[in-house]
Length: 247
Ligand code: SF4
Image (tube, rainbow, N blue to C red):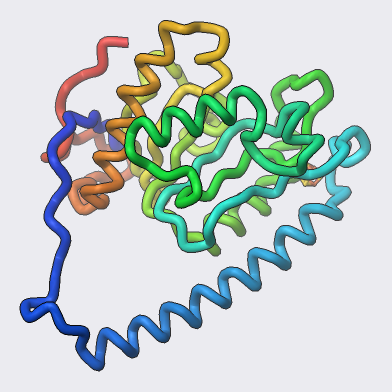
């Protein structure tokens, strides 16, 4: 597992064609990518309908609406939270309550447009009294999350809070030491942040979350090429990271 810490280096320059003109090959690639995109959107719509009707676990009985997820199917960034809350349950959308508004503020403060991000949760239906989803519920819903990852293929999977961090990184998660760092796990680059709801209760965490979001933006801008040397089971700093976190 990679442990890497953002140090705020500037993004790498974008690759541009030498004469600035589109080549025939790039036109073909664009057409093919549009076709692939349409395909992903169609598959996502089918998956969303399946989630809306799902009865796989007991949360189906207490929900008002499932909140399958929202965002573009070609998003470079996927944010995964814990579970829908009251507002999300009412609207059938992820992160639309107070925590969602803080998430939007944090994203946009770091220069990440919320509309460019695919946002979902570990479980798609609200647990009663907003309790954490239990292992049976997480397991029942996990195939949906895996299908979303397979469809969207995000460059970075941002794990917002302890529950999603546990799902992807294992049970020994410590948010105070793992937030603001990226981890390579099963071919995915995962980045850990506090759940935005934590910032609603502890104002001091908001500054920490702003810093983490800025690291995430930097990681997105640079791509993940600097992480390729990392492999599961190894700890190695990359050229983009180095400063240990103080929180
Ligand atoms: S939480 Fe997931 S598995 Fe459970 S009913 Fe909702 S969609 Fe189905």
